[in-house]
Length: 358
Image 1 (cartoon, rainbow, N blue to C red):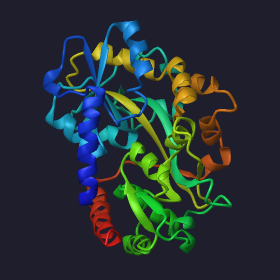
Image 2: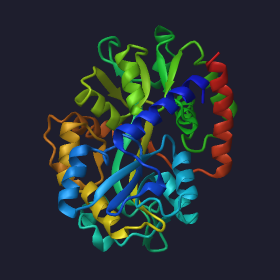
Image 3: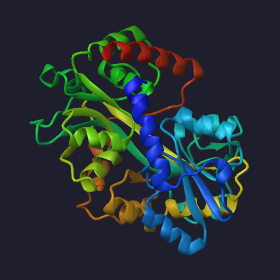
């Protein structure tokens, strides 16, 4: 990451630790249930934790990560420290193979039968008849824009390269994501592009465009509110939250050339001190009861629970975004990548990012 970003991340992490009482693994108190997730991603909503505590007596404490690699590192270096962990479906197999998560007794997940079969039964979450992740939410990664300054609304991924927005573009600092968008822009397979030289050239062409990079939803919202950019890559659920909760004039679209589809699951960490409590928390997280409050009060990705999605009013912004059938048809879903591919994309992005930052 850029040095400026590293400093910002350190400061943000320090503040988050103090503000949310996220404690070190060794500081676990009796009766605590420890959850590892992105900050501000549903599981740490104060009203939800209060409701869960009233139901179970369990006090939920969070620790946070800023990337999937950091999440894996925390699981590797702190065995027995966590009960529940949020894992993108493309990393669940790897986590299971490394022994970082354990099989889940789905009989304890009362909402299991109403989850979308395509996600619930996905090979990404199930191995050899055992379930290692419970499908939680799904969403899209596309292009967000300022509805006040970007008119008409864009429809193409090429808006990122449009000279009209020179110095007004923001990208997520994530190698896989930027490579995926460049692959879409160059007509290649998003998950396994063959011509990385063409992708590198396409990304290098963003030099006059890029204003800054973002790592977290909170950071994105702050940059947007400060009018740092007009166009950015972004997540659909985050766009709903930015509009619903932060009251920002955020538009969101899936490019005509295609967008990124994904789904996240909740897993039980290997050696979880409270596996039963973990199952109860996961069941609450996938319930219609929790999802309705999260989606309507804050804004959320689409639930993997069919009954949960059905509770939303037609006026809900998230329902409008995730109910766009034509946009969904344009999605390619993220697939697991080999270590070789991850390394190649990481090396490519490191080189490009250095050039873009100059």
